[in-house]
Amino acid sequence: MLVVDKDILGISAARLDEAGAGLTAREIAQQPAVWPQIDTLVSDHRVALDAFLAPLLARADVRIVLTGAGTSAFIGECLTPAMLGKGWRAEAVATTDLVSGPQQFLQPAVPTLLVSFARSGSSPESLAAVTLADQLVGEVYHLVITCNADGELYRMAQSRSNAFAILLPDATHDRGFAMTTSFTSMLLAASLAFGLLAPGATAAPSAAAAELLTGALPLLQALVARRFKRVVYLGSNELRGLAREASLKLLELTDGQVVALFDSPLGFRHGPKTIVDSDTLVVVLLSNDPHARRYDLDLLRELRNDGRAGQVLALSGRAAPEPGADVLALQGTEDAGELALALPYILFCQSFALLQSLALGLRPDTPSVSGTVNRVVRGVTIYPLAGEDHVPRG
Image 1: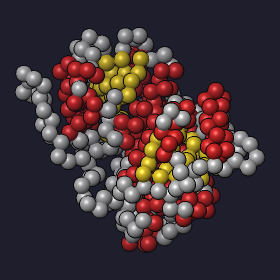
Image 2: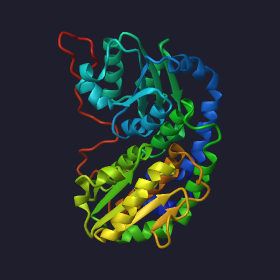
Image 3: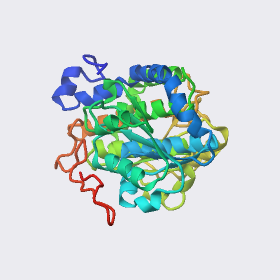
Image 4: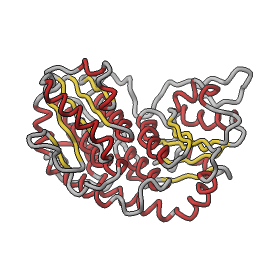
């Protein structure tokens, strides 16, 4: 862990530890320092990565399946629009779907690159998804991006000729309940590995995120003081997956006491907008893509004109779109791509979730009061396919 004894979000290290928030707070705060390390790590693996990936990406028949569970699954949802934009056949399918419906989601006759994201690399679904792909797909390859050198997924990838593993620095292996550094680091590693972000693209988002930790503190504190009962995150394309992760982070760290929802700005009008009332905060993650941004801004104006939401806030890589708009503009990210912009955006959302958790009297490092939700999922039984006995059981 790179951040040890310093104030984080205006709270001393000693107080954070006493409140059961030290791990999560440090793991949020260390991210701007970790991201350049991921950039360097992927660059160091470039030759070997290209030898593995380039032949697959050059083939029109290869299907890329991005998989993981929970937060790890949302990484794939962030990446898929960018991959489709490159002309690749890419889909985000959670391990939880692959395991329960392998014959629906896996295509035996289609060459497949299964990209597995995993913080621990030992969850039953992650391991079963790999086994099922090996069983059912005639030609399958594995790219594993993980934070844990001791995870079974990483060990598996090292022992196979059809697999490649990217092991991220130990600092990315979050010890707190919620995935924070692990999420952004795996998202960044994949973005760099597939050429969706260029080397060095972490400089601007890292600087913007570091500034947020202090510069956005008054705004964060004001939002927490409002004690919103509902929070909605909205994002287009790559940022829709990010909105989903932001909503889960708030739900997890508040132990479900704050209702969190996500959608796209266009999709929000089609029913989900009914959730908005005076106890609702709506956060719009504005796109830097000129076309998508038009739709984002239209909804932003509509929500403000409706006057129903308790507060409407926009995060933006550019200056406020119009005078008087409630917009937090990030410095130096005017030209950032969506996947780069996602990094400081989610750090803001993580920080809000942490402070909201503390305000509710919870312990963010272990927020589940009942103990029924765990850092690494337990209690999952993996069943064999009909007539098969060798699918691993969790």
